[in-house]
Amino acid sequence: MDRIPILKMGAFLLVTIQVDMHDRLAMALQDDLSNKIVETGARGVLIDISSLEMVDSFIGRMIANIASVARVLDAETVVVGMRPAVAITLVELGLSLHGVRTALDVERGMELLETALADGPR
Amino acid sequence: MVVVRRAALEIRREEDMVRVRRSVRQWADELGFGLVDQTKLVTAASELSRNALVHGGGGTVVFEALEDGPRRGLRLTFTDEGPGIPDVELALSDGYTTGSGLGFGLGGAKRLVNEFSIESRRGAGTRVVMTRWK
Picture 1 (cartoon, helix red, strand yellow):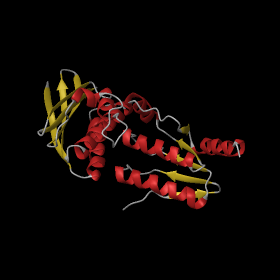
Picture 2 (tube, rainbow over the protein chains, first blue to last red):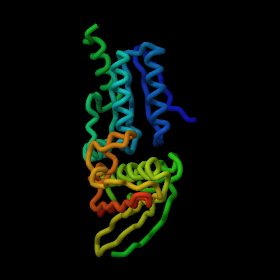
Picture 3 (tube, each protein chain N blue to C red):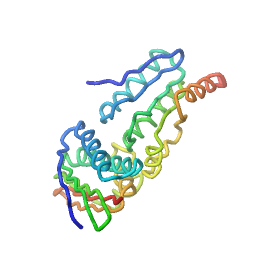
Picture 4 (cartoon, helix red, strand yellow):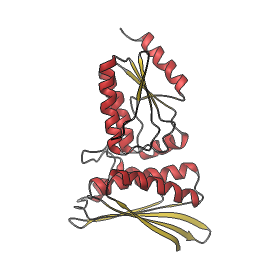
């Protein structure tokens, strides 16, 4: 089965979703990321969804789950690059991605993670 | 109102959901829908495809390009032969879920289109018709 690649950049993991995900692929990403956080001791996860043309309730739930699991595993998650049309649709759909940090692009997302790491309670 | 074009796709596997999303995008684009409307249609279609697949055990979607005077629209009809939805009103309410989603599938899809109707009978499957006008 196809897998979405996860890159390690210093203390962070970087995921760029470039395909229209079917549900199994989204589930696999959730599992892979959780394992990778533990394996690498990563402190942050950056998910770039700028290529995603749509986020429905399932993919939205997957993103929220990743953020929750990462938090339990002592890592912050930032979702970057959401397209305006996707954001409008998500809100109308009724999903607000509570508890998921977002940034406009990868650069700002990285800044957010670095700040979170520096200001962290540990 | 006239149906100017019609086509159908099967929804049997998860990969078919991706195919449905791609086709909806293409039809909506060809009908002149803007990016936000295209995205709403694709997202609503994704929710209903999943519904047909997960709860209905697979089904079909019929695409229809509509003309009503100067108006153009896209009508999508999702049909499955699954167990049916026991309580449609309840299924449409936010937060209602059978466990595999957040519970925004049907109600959320309804908010993304202009016209939305569900017919469902126990043991006889479900038919959802939705239309978005340009």
